[in-house]
Length: 79
Image (cartoon, rainbow, N blue to C red; front, side, top):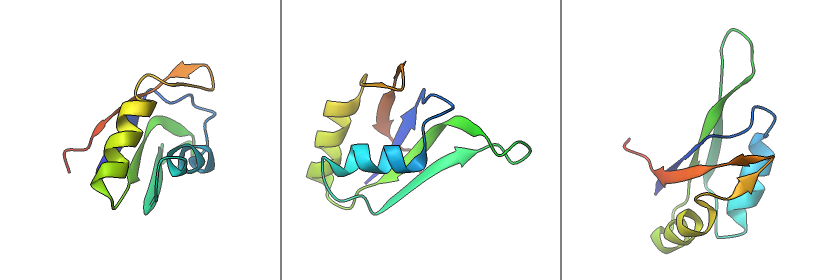
């Protein structure tokens, strides 16, 4: 199940996101989206969790969590 994580602080790293979601289950893939021109974070990421129950738990627990002084939003990815 693929999750979209939005409203990330520009300083949040892919490793921080992976660790955060790993507390709720297996993370198959984590991709922090970067600006091609600057190499800086665009403020969102995709997290793939193979187990639907774990993904649901992560979504419910982490939606509106405060990470690096930003209240993140987690939802199911459309793609």
